[in-house]
Image (cartoon, rainbow, N blue to C red; front, side):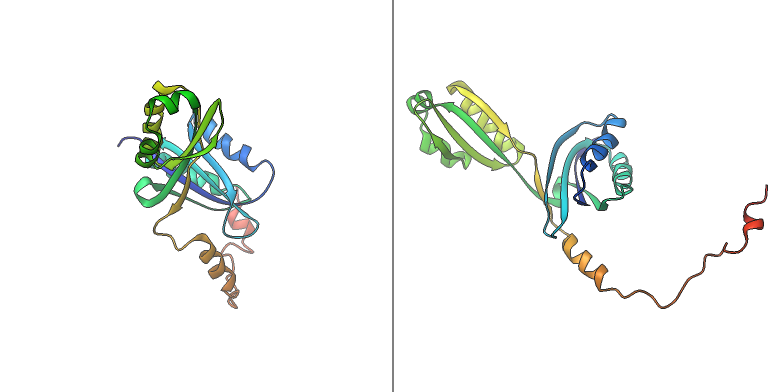
Length: 196
């Protein structure tokens, strides 16, 4: 078994300090977070964390169970890259003179799906989105032409096979409480259970 990239999706109530507690779960196990994104979800009042790590599946399974033990966490999933649709946004700042002189900008934009978002005398900013390999390829093209600055966002991902957590919440809310009361089998047997 070897490490691979996993995306962990965590649905939570929006509470102060939760991000720190989740980060501690990773740092205690000396697991590096490759990417972390937090945003509102499709359900009002519920936030979604998208965390990318490189790890063994067995370790990821345990991590997800640990994350779900946090009081504010409603549900956590983990997925391989094949099971999700994902993108990252990247911005590239380059010298306007350099790029205008030496590069066929239209071809560059077409080939890499980029677009110019700011054009000034001193610099131009391009934006593109895609998988990491795609955004990295544009770095190698722009580096020889005065790449001043580069930044990439955290991953945003949607699980392919899921009908969505929203549906699960609706199902959960629709279920009526059961009329049948199930007694704990140890109730009233304190002496038997706790004898020393």
